[in-house]
Picture 1 (cartoon, rainbow, N blue to C red):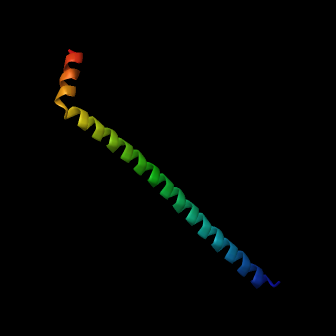
Picture 2: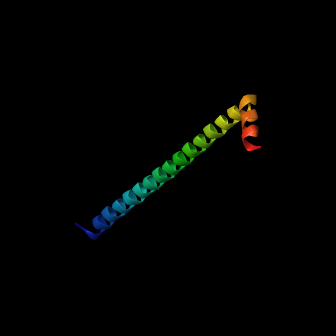
Picture 3: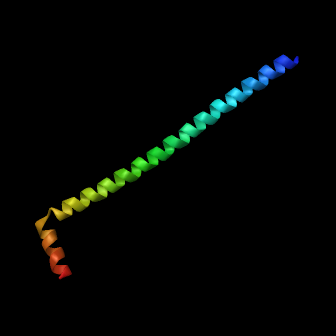
Length: 68
């Protein structure tokens, strides 16, 4: 193999490595975003459940009795 061929092969491998690193980094970013979205969804469900409880007059009345 000539030097030019070797250089071309090394350049192609470096380009492929850079492409794979970018794909890996993008995948990690997507995983982080999906995890964050799942956390937000869980918080929203929890807040929704609290709102349902707080909108029930009997529950609020019982809580006031228990507190005071």
